[in-house]
Amino acid sequence: MGEGIAGLSPEEMGKEQTEGYLAPRTYIKQEVTLPEPALDLALLSSYEWCRISTACPNLLHIELLHKGAHGMGFDPLILSGPRAALPHATAADRILQPGDCLIIDFGGKIGGYTADITRTVAIGTDNPEWKEIYEVVKEANTAARRLARPDVKAEDVDRAARNVIEKAGYGEHFTHRTGHGLGLDVHEPPYIVAGDKTPLQPGMTFTIEPGIYIPGKYGVRIEDDVLITKDGCETLSAFPREFTAI
Image (tube, rainbow, N blue to C red; front, side):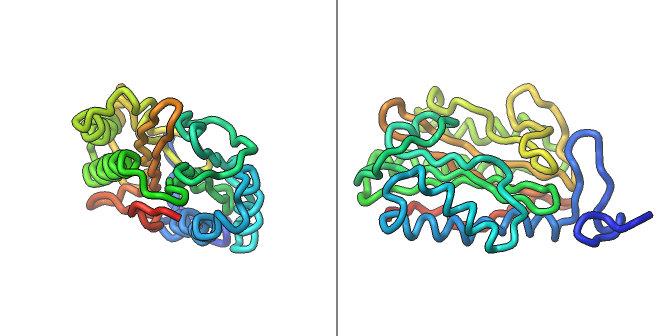
């Protein structure tokens, strides 16, 4: 048998499975962490070059290519202000305003594998209500990642995140699944949602991305990519999750 992607042997690549693809930890880690310097640049420089939020995808794309990506895994979602309350809306050509939240959801692609991470920041001010919601979403993200391990059902990971948000009184504002499988497709099984009883197995990679969306005001989503190991769950995305105002 010949070599696999990026010169890796079939043994290093691991075998494919019917639902979700198994790839070596080092390879998945590479494609997940590669976007993080680009995200760092985007967040730290927003007021300097990205007053209009539709400019952000272009810089992200350039920075990803510069860091070694083969391309974008999907069209980035750059949402600010009230549009951030629409989880998967398209970017609007608007000027960022003090008090806005800014959601950046994107990922690069290497060797066919795609990353998918999201961070949310406050623009120019520290809104107490927004910060409270942010902390709830961060706690939900942590709860889901903490539960994920072999033989836990996908839907139970969703429930772990949802319990936190419901307890805080925002259950009706968490309007999408907690996550999805990640590999050669940006969305593939397992789906981290009620009704998916797939038992998690070592080698599965998927997202954990709880969110709260307040119509007409703002939204918060924190998305990480994780890998199920034989002993538990490894979080592959290392970008900080702490509340940030820029």
